[in-house]
Amino acid sequence: MNSKMRNKILSSGLVIGLLGSALVGCGQTQNAAVNSVGGNTAQTANQTAGQTINQEAVNDEAVSEVQQSEAVALEGLEDVDYSSDFEGINGCAVFYCAVQKQGQVYNMDIAQKEASHCSTFKIVSTLMGLHEGVLKDVNTTMGYDGKNQYPFDAWNTDLNLKDAFASSCVWYFRKVIDGVGQEKTAEMLKDLGYGNCDISQWQGSGTNGTPDLDGFWLESSLKISPMEQVQVLVKIFEEQAVFTEEERSTLKDVMLVEENEGYKVYGKTGTGYGDNAWFVGFVEKNGENEYFALRLNEESLKGEKSMTITGGKAKEIALKIIANRK
Image 1 (tube, rainbow, N blue to C red):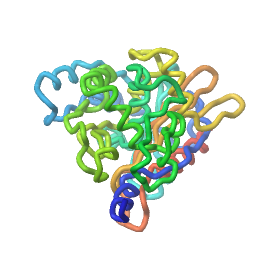
Image 2 (image 1 turned 180 degrees about the vertical axis):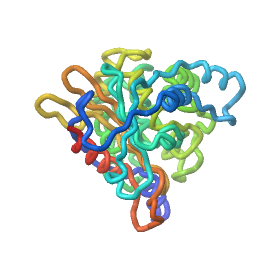
Image 3 (image 1 turned 180 degrees about the horizontal axis):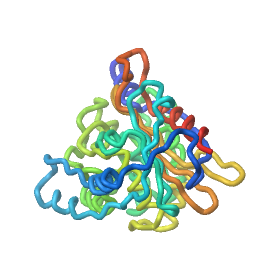
Image 4 (image 1 turned 90 degrees about the vertical axis):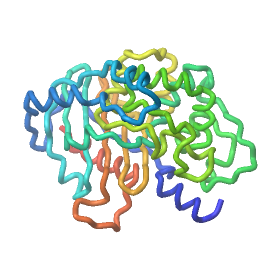
């Protein structure tokens, strides 16, 4: 692979990074100044999140089915100012505890805006692979042919699921999603209410130059908002979707970031081109989960272009916010 290809892959966020950890407690009091979101704002958020439809979806029937998907209502949302934690970077954060039915949102407008989710899609593609039998457990391999030489050493071997998830290996998950197939993928995304549910660019938009490193989830047709990311996580882990306990357990195994006394942290980063970076997951404590999605969508509010926006940066900001929550 030449240097141009390598730079494209790096800039598209396929960079290996360790996921961070922090404690988030459901219903904790904010250190930052928090104001209740007015009824109209909260109602609008619940009505619009998860229902934005890409008008260029495959066909009218598919769009109709997506519109009929029932999104999880995020109740008891409060507006919170995290601008100091974002350090001038434009972005948003959503935290939500399903048991307590309360959450916090920073920058509601951005939180409702759909964008490519990039590597955070590995959360759902792992579940789909398990559900359809493409993946058996954390030790499942997908057959590295030994011919392609990728820019990350971790990808140049016959990885198992756990290692592929940790290293964000695109060729591995390209094989997983092809094994699931278009029909089943479309069906499960609609069941989850996964953003615009648009997989019309099945092979991708050419983002990374080769078929085994491209897909509809990489700066292509499928898009989702931070609010919808949280809604999907609630559906999955609050047992409102088709997936089994065993499948969720395997997913949690590969998502585990850190385990400390009293709590566990799960998550996945994702990075797109230039202005699109994510950190998505949840914290498990005292039998409750608090789900979160943080997205950066501009290099800097001040117009500074020296800063590189990646999933790692999104994670760093998220963990700083979480650390300040008391």
